[in-house]
Length: 638
Image (cartoon, rainbow, N blue to C red; front, side, top):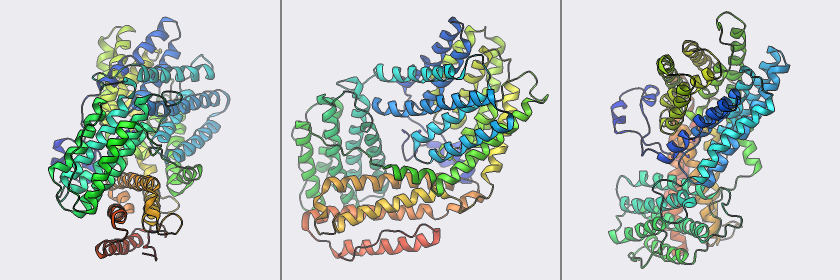
């Protein structure tokens, strides 16, 4: 979804909703930002032309499948680097093609009961894997949507042909993403404009945090710096665009990102101290940001005062950055190392099991009901029953927002989209008018992703246009009814009692954040080998610091979404946001300790007191929220 920012930015009207209950205020908010014109262009060139090619070669059904794949890839086509788009668009497309293959063959060769069991099993698998992260969640979504389409939309072509058509649709959009230059791209090789923008925003965020030091905005600026670092880390972590990462531009971007880490550390320590920073100290990070954007050398950087350990660390970091910008040598500090064991824990742990059960139950129940209705007179002449389970897939995904918000947005968006399509279908010529409508909707997808209702409305018009081109009659009324039925199914399943404690996904992410904070604290205060020189291994420290802040941002996002559920669900995660806030303060304090240890070799009584108070309060809060027993503790050597 990132990638979406860890902290959503809402419109200035959000304050008007503050008096409403959280579960009702959430669906009334929308993210804002500049129009992604490059994504709009790609969307216009994707689904519509693919459908047109299918019509021209007399393979309309294949064109429909390819256009659906392009639409789903367009939903995942978020701002960021080209290298990240390979994984963000490619992995879900592979999963979607696999789901289409399984769904097609299961629908052709097994009965309704066995088919429902197969789809339920896929739901369990996809739900568990969705707990791993955003890309895995997108893959799980497309796996189930592909399975529903394959089983519920019979077409004359065999399953492997449909799977290839699905892959072709996604690959076409991915090819557009990699080949087309971004309008208004920065100086230099346009293929690196996403990476360059992401790294430049890190230096901007460092300057903004320094400017906010000693003010009430420091905490928000530090969160913004974390989001910028997360985005840059993702932008650089994809596959190399050149075989040996040989281009000077690519090596320089790696070096520039690595050079931002000590600057971020020093800025965090200054913000923790709570003392204002002179304007002179802000000039260096701002010049570095301009140098990244313009792909130039930094020139002389003004040196800040060296009157305190954190200011001396800032000065040293600026000197290091100037050297790194000039020689272009950088390490691999952007890589987020998550082993197979961690991924399996996420998929099969408490959070993944709860996620999988709800997805499996919702998907299986909606598929069973859809098949039962398919054999009744309720469907009339509409022979395709995929809409109900496919709708349930999007509704049951908690990473798309709180449950009630998803339900309200999906219902409103489907009704609006179906009514709009009914009007268009009455006046547009066929098929050329419908092809143009598909192209228009493809262009609107990147803008509509700012709100789930808008995205649903655009996708509804697009899909209804596709199925009408494919030979199905106008189906607006039945789609509205099926959507409302899917909303009811997901609401019921979402409130069913489950084995274990509710809110498992939030607690699982918070437990990961606790472990990352513990590892970072131990490394700073004791060292990796139990010695007293751990702070000298700065590359490891920066990697641990990044993981601590990143996992905390993910935990806070999950906790915030859970807080906007209906009270019956929100109460199960009460207190988790306070624990996450305490952990963030602990990581901030650990960062300040690391900078002070680098300069003086020892901690002040103030540092020790802050650590002791935070760890004591964290232990008390953890007992109240029922988190796992492992927690950060103050090493005995300190």
